[in-house]
Image (cartoon, rainbow, N blue to C red; front, side, top):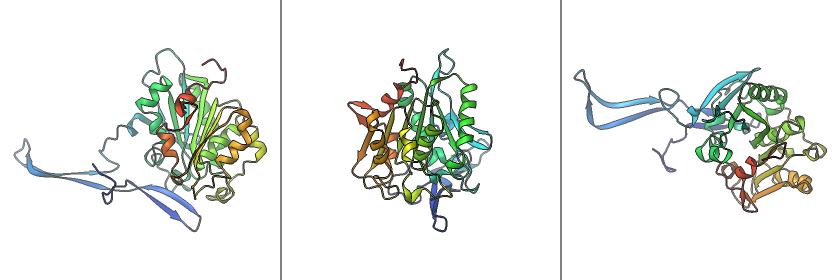
Length: 302
């Protein structure tokens, strides 16, 4: 066990490449040693004085192990199936689009794990708390090889394939994401206006300084944002220095508030406002984010 003061506690390393302005979370090859105060006798008469583990080998992570890895049309993904998937009912699907730091960055970090390990976005939605709120929900967490704007069609095909092969309620598919994934959550709705029942975008990287952060990013125009005709909730901290609040969450809200869009603003917290999303903390008129999401449906019969 570690605490905030433990040196070397991180299992990933966020490295910014200032040549490309790209930052990536790379998995670290960590060796853990458990030193025993007394030797542990073994059946063969020898003693075990310490035990060693490697981070990516022989260590069980119960949250990560809830997901199964897959690949579709060259797009890697992790997929969670709810415990009650075969109860005879259709269940919602939540798609989590990770931030830019969890991308594969031209294959260098295309490990199909960072999108689960770098923050609690996807794993939180597979938690007992979230699953109880949604009465069992599938969770899909794809990983982009480099930049989300290059994978709009790939992600759409992946989602349709997941729907086809699972007991998913096609009226209750939700688009979630943070930072670069917050951009993707919105752009997927723009490109698929009849696919999602709601979109939750946290600190969406749609501001001018982030459009080309990791390649030739695509600008989402005001007209495209205005075309979003499903329930929308945006979340961000005002002091976010990575993604500009005024050009991102506030911009989306301003363009969509007449359609009932919701904005949750935090005064402080920087770029890590996805922590609030992962804890189901955003609240509007007494209703928390996950509960609100679970009530959204294309047929409005929830």
